[in-house]
Length: 533
Image (cartoon, rainbow, N blue to C red; front, side, top):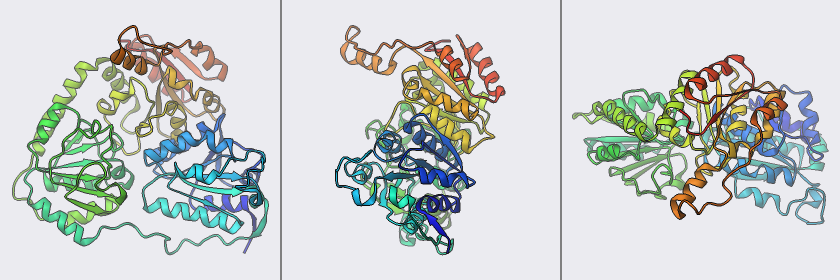
């Protein structure tokens, strides 16, 4: 049994669970982890702010489907990272957060030790799936293995392991858990629930499938298309479900639930099979959207059942395992559904949407063509990206990122960088407004330092445009306050960081510039004026 420090046990356990990259900033409390990284095969990416490290880890997780790992220090490190951790929690993105802590005998004593945070575990409990404090090197290894075992079979959300400084430095015999019997079994559906679901489906004439982020995370795509064909059922996607099946497939309506034509179409359907979704507020316009009843709700998190929409039947299961079981149980359909109506309906909804969002649709189409089918787009909370959740078609899993749940600014650039770390051979584009970009603009230095070939499309309105628009809508033209921004010269900023830059005043120049930037294979910024055609 080898002797290891707590820091070495953490790094060895990360490697043993297949981690390839970690994100963080070294500090006085986690130096033993960083010393162990030197002799490991893990790639480490230092950021200029812990928020950037958290978003990079999230982007890595969303692009690869594997947990992102981040290493904040005690106190200010974990509070700085709390926003990306909370964003990952709300969007069900798997993170392994390993923070340091003050010496074990001083924890929770409030003696005023450097970096001490009052009850750090209670703080992180609010934004993680579970917390643990490791008090020996052996516990360090065990908790890392527990984290990966849990995330491999349950809802992907951040988990947090806290390790005191003296535990990281102490040395002891450590047995790394063997890969044998899993800690947690796969979440397979109850056969009785599947039988009831199949019977309910058999009585329907026009079912529809509603697939969310849980469907994407489970890798259910192929089985979902088989189920759609077997039931003659169209597939509607949530924002987080984009990519689970190709949006150009004739059975897929995409993320157009809000469209009046789609709502009218659903009035003629008679059953909803909801898979891996919590019926979130954004996707349902604060739960105003109507779904054909009865609703069968299949989800890996039973806490979501009956929360937002009443379900006639619930199936607690991993989405892929549940759909595969359902495929075996359903009888052959005797009557056709409404699948043949989908291509025309999709065409009509896209045409209607484009009339009111011409600029956004044009620029989204330019990005889509430039990225090819498997390129990755990371969105910020900005005016160009909101419509993209509908009009930007996604063809491959894990190629579209949007901070839907918490809705934080500053997500896009570092998330895109993390995606590039995880998918080095794919093209990656981030889209951010000038206001959101300034939240994490310092991470351009890291893009340059590691030559992460991410192209940032910077939409400049010299304002918090969406906030300004809402102020005008609610209070009138003359009732805006502090939404106009005095921006730096973004060209000079990019040049100072050593990042390629150009300005594209119109769509023609943008298309040319984006292609050029992607061919450069280095970090790049393309500034475009808001609303420019």
